[in-house]
Structure formats: C-alpha cells, structure tokens
Image (tube, rainbow, N blue to C red):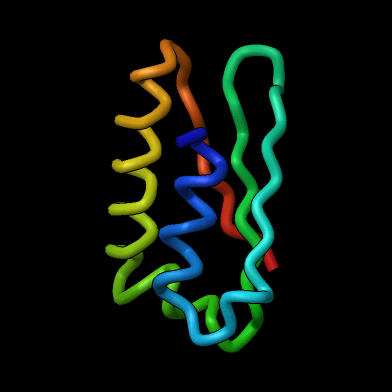
Length: 78
C-alpha cells in the first residue's frame, strides 16, 4: 500500500464523515509532503487530545515512508 493511501485509510477510520477526507501527495525537493484535509467537525478527532492522534499518525507515516527510503511530513490543514 502506498503511503498516501495508508494515511487516507487511517483518517477515514477515525472520522465521522469519511467522504470528506482528502489526501494530497507532493514533493518539496528533499522530503515528501502529505497533506490531509478532513471536515471541520472531524478535525479534532484527527488531531486528538494534546495532538496524540496526530503524533501517532506521523509516527506511522515515518515508518511507512522509511520503508520506501524517503522522509515524509504530514500536514493537517483546514
């Protein structure tokens, strides 16, 4: 499974409106940047208390992207 697909799958499992989840994949020259967009009502569910859920997503992303030999960064945007 590709890294953006993995992030999208995890986000869809967390939110109440899975159809509103959008994942974009970009390359900024050095690193891969994964941008995650969710509905406004679900933003808190993806970020979690004190950012714990977002930190867990970033940890999984780091492991998955390391398997591809690259570094990746997760941005959660409005």
